[in-house]
Length: 161
Image 1 (tube, rainbow, N blue to C red):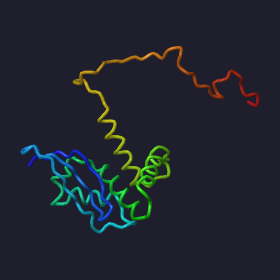
Image 2 (tube, rainbow, N blue to C red; image 1 turned 180 degrees about the horizontal axis):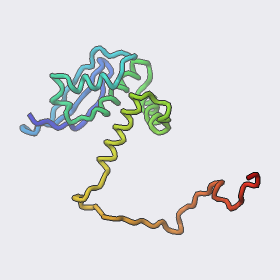
Image 3 (spheres, one colour; image 1 turned 90 degrees about the vertical axis):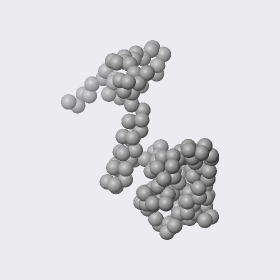
Image 4 (cartoon, helix red, strand yellow; image 1 turned 60 degrees about the vertical axis):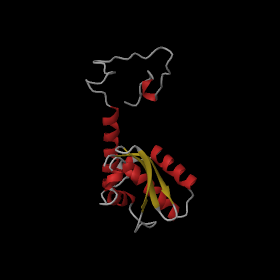
């Protein structure tokens, strides 16, 4: 059965993940509600997302949904169980991704972030077979660009040495 997920979402009561998918053999759009069981406000979202993705009954429907997206959906569910509204949860996660200090993360979380960065790099990478690939690309920045100044760029030397 060939299935392509079109949209993903969450349902808070009961906690569920909703997948809208297209069945390629019949061409029909369908909706599947996947209940999230044994999940509390203290659960690990990454482990819950992995468990759900590899579940026997749901793996066919979730194979084209990334693990990162499932983890974000579980984060929304967990925040709702902790009492946060949807808007607060979305704003907090956007802000957290923008200003995150990678030096303060645990080894497991750091390796997960690095894997996400590697995945993003591989998706954006240009290879020789790509139509917009240019070998030895050189870019010159014009005079109109803003020059950043720094204290060590100044010509004054330190007199103490």
